[in-house]
Image (cartoon, rainbow, N blue to C red; front, side, top):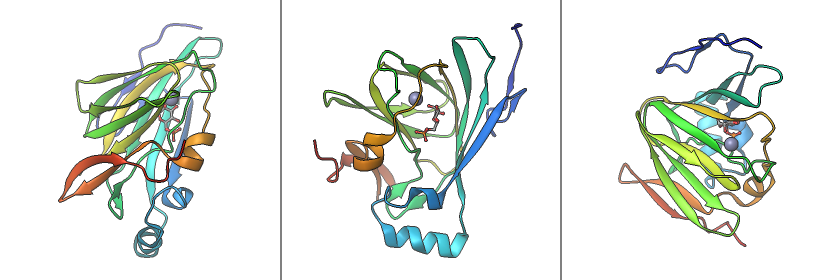
Length: 187
Ligand code: M6P
Ligand code: ZN
């Protein structure tokens, strides 16, 4: 392993050099957005849009790795484009999200039921403590780009959020973002 300067474009999330990349598309979010009809209509009108892209820089053998997540603006019904959301597989591993451009809300909840929201905007670095579930939501009209950094062994645990969602939803109310309790989240 050798030290290296990695260039990150704050508007596109492009990383150079990078070691991996994936995209998530609208059709992968069936059952996650509450308005199925709006999802079907959007898929029909616009096709299977990319809603976010994750690019990473990983050095084999290092404890840390980092990357960018670039989220497109958009909505499915009154819900904004969002990530799947997850806990880390390791309960002793946190993460940071440093917003480069755009605006959004980072939704978090702890295993014991506390909820928090952190505004995502350029200059704000969000601290995600170990064992807090987290989902980012693009509430703006442009791309939301953030740099994340965590342990390579943190892992992802998607099960709870995939079945129940987060404890809160971020919805558009008269064009402003509001956080409301998620009626589908049952303890
Ligand atoms: C952040 C990081 C990644 C994560 C990505 C998308 O960039 O936490 O590890 O994969 O967000 O979030 P999700 O995996 O919940 O879809
Ligand atoms: Zn994470």
